[in-house]
Image: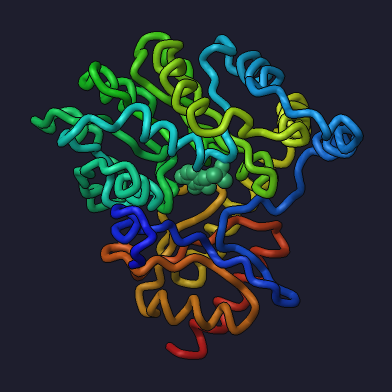
Length: 359
Ligand SMILES: *Cc1c(COP(=O)(O)O)cnc(C)c1O
């Protein structure tokens, strides 16, 4: 608390990102970064863009990116809002769509923790709905809630569980809440779930959020976007242009467009991660872990006879970082990013030794 701060600042709950330490021989499986690099064509476009033209402001509409997204998903560029990472897109979504006085925002108890952070920042009351016993989202809870909500948000596949909801469930949720925005954060959708973008035409209250940080391997560049009806997107753009008219720099626009155009690289690198995930799940199960069914580039696993916090620290001693959340219900799980087959082998060998040693 400081007398210089605005009053609301002391009540904020800033998001805690996964650690980015500078250690040797470190295996980072804690923030769901892609184990393979971005498309070489994206890198080439970024290099080509690094010239004298950087003295000029970028295109404030990021038209090239909005058009490339529109082509990919058969929507109009007017339905796309770009942002400096999807976290910024989420901030604009909360600001533009969820601030309706006392009306609560419905969200799962276990989901991306930034949602609660933005509720504090924008003074939106959250209404927390527990996941089912098996950690899935129960669509019925978002249909028969008897509330007058400000909106609904969840991640699909959900984080950190990796479990995906079907499009028919999402469509039913949107149908049952026609007067509010239903926001589907699809940060991991490319690793095995279905995008809700095609539902927007029938359900103009659906907002889909994508990022280049996970399946496009461009977390260091900060690019995300939303796809929604024109009506919703106009509101989002009003907020964006009241905050930062140039969220994407020239290099980010060039790199993101080239990445979207390199379908072959994208499909091959995604496939490699999905194959590594399936093999990682088998290896973890063979060591005695219970693993939730993941459609993402991470798995959420627990060992019935080993404390998750202790395992995470022991792994860290061995130079392997995984994510451990201390939140009730999931404090005995580890969220492990899918790496290369070699990364997965190093992790599983280490886990195998750790669980043998102490059991
Ligand atoms: C990683 C992640 C984001 C943030 O992505 P950025 O584009 O890097 O800001 C948003 N939502 C979920 C569920 C994520 O896991």
